[in-house]
Amino acid sequence: MHRPGMSELVCYPAEDIPTVWGLVSGHVQKALDRGSDYTAQQIYEGLCDRQMVLWTSQKDGYIEAALVTAIYEENGVKSCSLIAAGGENLDSWVDWLGHVEQYAREHGAEELRIYGRYAWLRKLKGFHFVMARKVLCL
Image (cartoon, rainbow, N blue to C red; front, side, top):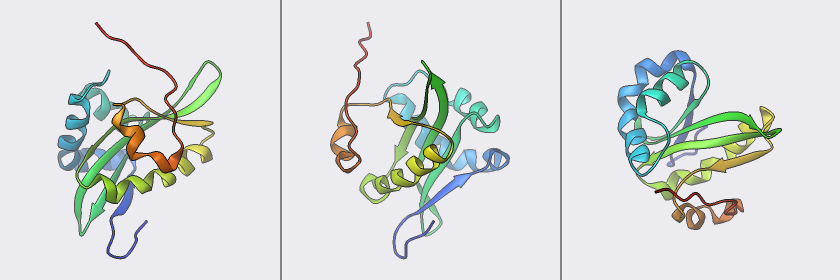
């Protein structure tokens, strides 16, 4: 999907992950470093095994951001989870989440979940996300 003069959303099939991983792993690792239950190796394996999906925002051939999602079922509810999102120029690519949401709905997900910092709520006002739960760690 491309908007002239804007970033382009690219969704990668599993067979392309070994080729593109070196270009996105830094963005993914930065997201994981801010707090995650996943390692970069687990993300890589999940992408290669089709358990997760890699999305990138590209502008003029440069990958400015990477987003990793996974669709799963928990307590009878099918959800799409945004597992990791990192990169540059957030304001130029965050609107692409509408396309990720559409993809999730087409694959039976009833909701889109983000496990991340509270600051995401401010950036995602237009998407009507709500804080559903808090996790305390010791």
